Image 1 (cartoon, rainbow, N blue to C red):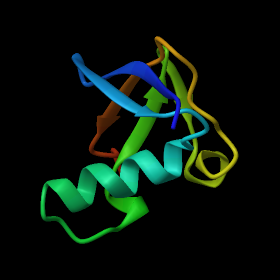
Image 2: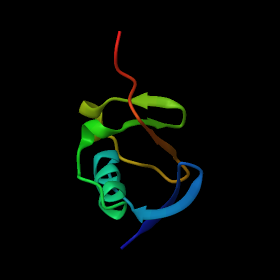
Image 3: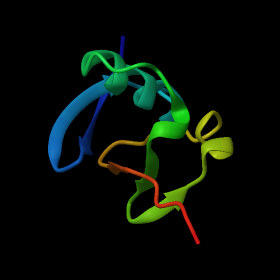
Image 4: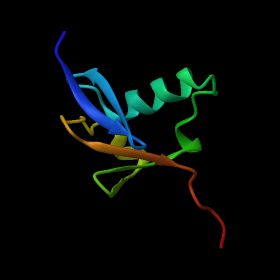
Length: 75
């Protein structure tokens, strides 16, 4: 198993090479004992927003900086 180092919300983390952003979000929610709900968080990688629909195909790379945050809704 080859791993890469990334940053998640400012903390260093190691994940398997080939991990998608969707898999990381699910893993983070599971570790936090939250319901696995992809709509519960918004994501950005290297300060660029990544939509929920793009997470499945977004493969994380070494040294990526991932941020998760509560999505803003309303009008």
